[in-house]
Length: 130
Image (cartoon, rainbow, N blue to C red; front, side, top):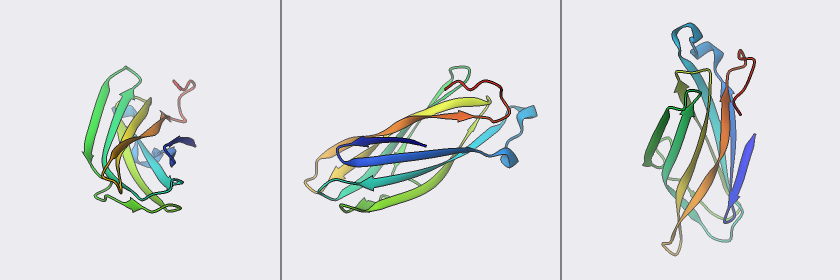
């Protein structure tokens, strides 16, 4: 489990290797990651955009940007939480992800909420990169 708090918004990530969806002999490795976002602040925040930087074991970087997460732009009142699960395929047996959510406060101000860096490691490998 990986977690980070930015301005009262806590992001918790739990990655999981998906053996049944991976084909190591074909250079296809798949992970799911479950994210929980908790609002420990004093005002409502709305998730507007996401940014991911995905790096595989060879150093190849892929960047992903888009509106919301899994088709939603959740608004979290103080004390609320929101969870979702998504996935990531790689051509290598390990890598890592890091990113940020752009959240909008009730005042209209935008803040970047950090997503903690987390490892994507196949349990079949002897050495993890992270």
